[in-house]
Structure formats: structure tokens, C-alpha cells
Length: 375
Image (cartoon, rainbow, N blue to C red):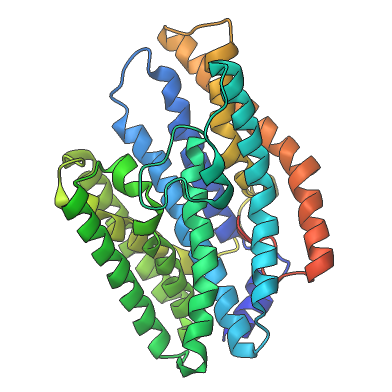
């Protein structure tokens, strides 16, 4: 079943459902950040910021879905090579990361006339078990991802052939979720951190988000699921997202135990429930123009995620025009979105894509080269 899935779904041809989720994820983040332009008018933007936060969480489970599928498939077939896996992951994520890290350092120097502390960023340790610094704030999620890429294949190798891939793997995955959740509970009880900077953006206590994506691909590709089952699970996922949104909006997040611990489990599980249906949906009835737009945004999503806050900081720090009325704030938000998308497209075509093509030449084309952001 898994080989069939990868042959028909993830080899070279793109999956519209997964592209749609990836495009949706980055547009949710972009839309959430665009609301910062309205801060001169109001700070009551929790609902909009929730959209951006859901976008990041969706990226996490999408990464788990793809990377987990690659690890399971390659290890079962005996084709797994740790060096190749890390080479492909790092050539996918590190060039863009270090490009935008350098740009953020230059921007910081231009604004503050001083050099920032950035050594921890070079090894993704800036938010390992503590709040993320102000420099390059969107990089917090990259630290979580890189930690997952480092640990996941090592765990697979440690389990080795002792894992019965149609049975015991899911038990190990659930055990890993329970272990990380226990760390998060202990962290909250011991340090009493804030919800956002103190828990959501701390790498050590967020790794379970990816594991829900791995469980989703296990059920979809190894266990096998009908489209009817995928549809029912997706409906349950939407219900879970609605409950999560209500909890986010109604609970005092910085003081509430559930919000700082199990709400993250609920969000990740609910979003992961959408993935099997998305992986089997090709959107055949949709106009080609819409499919093309979704594909382009999906391709640009990594660059767009990394560049958007830099664009915003440049607008706020260097623009002679200051916005204060509703019309001006709306225009500033539109300009921000257009410029960010334009910058992302430029970076993708002239920096990211050439590196990916070179990567494929030296490592061989992946079975999931273009399907999702971190491939």
C-alpha cells in the first residue's frame, strides 16, 4: 500500500490537496502578520493572530506527514541512508534560513547601530528550552523542525527491525507523544511560562506536533484508509479545530493549565486529521487557473514564510509614510502582502530553486521532492 501511495501520490506529480494545505498554511501566517498593520487602531486582534498560529501548526503536521512517510518507506525497503536523508533536508532548509538570518542581522545593525547576538542561531539553539530572542523571530519554528529532522531518523535507526511496521510503530509514536507531553506538563508546572513565548515557541516541548503527522501517514499509507474514512476523520478534525479556536479565544492562556499543555495536542491532532483526505484529493473539478495559483503559492511558501516579517520591519522602520486611519492601515496591509509575495517568488526562482536542482543532482531525486515545504 505504501509503495502504491508514493508511486501515485508523491512521486514527482504534485498532490493538489497537500499543496492546498501548504498554501493555506502560509497564507494564514501572512494574513495574521498583515493584521500588525492595524495596531495603530487596536490591539484586539486575537482572532486574526489565531489564524497565523494555526498556519504554523499546520506546517508542523505537514512536515511530519511527509518526512514520516519517507522514513517509513525507505527503512522498510532497505533504502534508508542517514547521510542522504540529512543532506537532502539540510540543503532544503538551511540555505534559505541562513540567507534570511544574514538579512535580519544586517537589518538589525541598520536599525540599532549595533551587532546582535546570533551565535545560537547558527546551530538552532536559540529557543531549545527557553524563549526565542527578538532577532529573526519567525525562526523559532525552524529550530523545532531542524530538531525533529535530527532526532527522527536516529530514533528510526534505534528501533531498527524490531518494529513491526503494521502494528507496533503506532504504539511507539503514541508513547513519544506521551513522553513529550509529559515534558511540557513538567515544564509548565515548574516554570509557569507564558503561553506563546514560554511554551508555543520552545522547541523542546513542541516536537510532538510532527508526530501527529507521522501517525496520519501511517494510517493513510501503511494501514490503508478508504476515502470515506478519510472524509469522516477530516470532519472530526474540523470539529477539533473549532473547539481549539474557542479554547484559544476564551481561556486565559498565560494562566490556564490546559491551554499551555493539552491544547497543543488537540490542535495538532485536529490538523493532522485533515491530511489523509488532502493526500487523496486532486481537485479535478477546479479551474486550472486556481490550481496553478495554489501550486505557485505552495512552491513559494518556505521563502514567503521567512521573508514576510523582514518586509514588515522594513516598512515600519524605513518607510516615510506612517499609517493611522483605517483606510491607510488597510492599504499598508495590502502593500505588505503584495511585496512579501513578490519577494518570495524572486527568492524561490533565483536562489531556492537552483539549490534544489543542484541537490537533486548530487543526491538523486527524492520520492517527495516537491510535494510539501521541507522536502
